[in-house]
Image 1 (cartoon, rainbow, N blue to C red):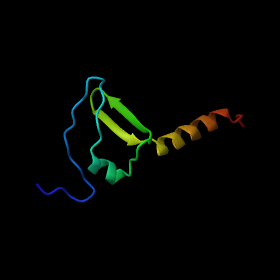
Image 2: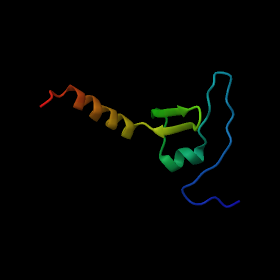
Image 3: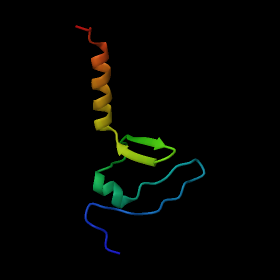
Amino acid sequence: MKIPEGKFIATVKVGEKGQIVIPKGARDIFGIEPGDTLLLLADKERGIAIVQNDEYLNFAEAIFSAQNKPHQ
């Protein structure tokens, strides 16, 4: 099976402590390095997604900053 560029598919096993390893091919596509923080999103109906944290943290920071501003 030829996988399109920028795509990746693999199976992973869950260890005894509930941990998984993100395969190298997926880490390479997204530039994930040791020490990076990822955000795990889970929905019982839709499944689990693991995303890079930076953009979501920026979004959350903007929301919290807006909440601290006095109403005009």
